[in-house]
Length: 373
Ligand code: NAD
Image (cartoon, rainbow, N blue to C red; front, side, top):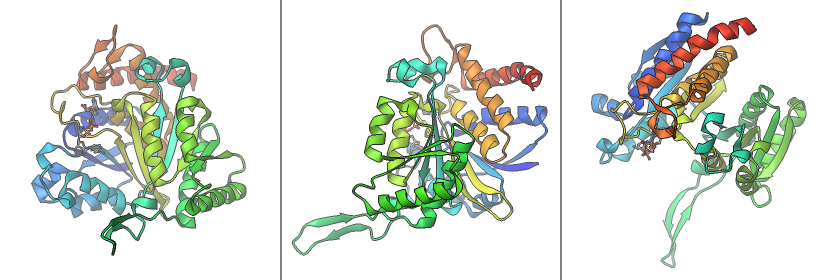
């Protein structure tokens, strides 16, 4: 039995979460591993109820859980609330408190959605990249930081890019381990040519590779070149590992190769604890979409694919994860679409109908999978 916490959050969060819950229920009914889920409040809804976007009670539940699945937080209703109490502050606090240092952002192009990319079909066909971004260190957190007044009357803004050996090694280790389960290729990105922190990053990744991961192919690339290569020839990449700042930019760039926000899942992982478990948060990369919330039109597939990542990375259930991803692919191949990915000749589905279509596809695929096994 696995225990997870569901944090539906604000806006479209509850709608897309409901479909992920249906899918988890299907796996509970059809596979041996059972997942028990309890709900928690986060974001604006939590602020309204408890006066804070992340209560100690919710945080405590998340700490004890095997994994956390989140919808989205935020919305105009809370625009005037103090920054420290905004919905987004609750999510940032959760990531920080669980020490989720490795952010996994897959960018996969489904054949059926190839037209949604702004790049030529032949450039993005079959694309399947995983970006591993360091999430708790680097220039977003480094000290000193601030804006100061200089004696000559000018102002100076300061941020510090800083990485230590263990911060680099733990995130690189995640990347190498993941690559072992994929195409065994890691590209490590930094700016070792102009930054000492980049030089250290390259040296530490090289040393870790030599000692523990010689079976994985490692290459190094300057982050600016990586930004170009992602547009020129993205298929050359398997796993990209990089720091917080470059990862922020490169993962957004890579996600847009797929062209569809409603399709993109993510995972954030913490360190492996002595009991062998690791803190993990799974969430779609999109926000709470206040413009379409409550209308049953949102695309639930990013949240459903986040659940697939949970099966794969938290529970090591790759058969379930493969089946769920194949079901999503199958639904798309049948030209079923939510409004955001709609194109000519396809049938438009509501949020709940898309959830039902995934369940129907799971029902159809399960016997085929059993026959293959
Ligand atoms: P957004 O991702 O919510 O929406 C951007 C656009 O994409 C909108 O037009 C929206 O309708 C569409 N969209 C997003 N998800 C979709 C889905 N599943 N199906 C169909 N269409 C979808 O970004 P935003 O508008 O910049 O932000 C809205 C709120 O969400 C803000 O309060 C912001 O702070 C918050 N936000 C939260 C997260 C998070 O919870 N992780 C991330 C980003 C933004």
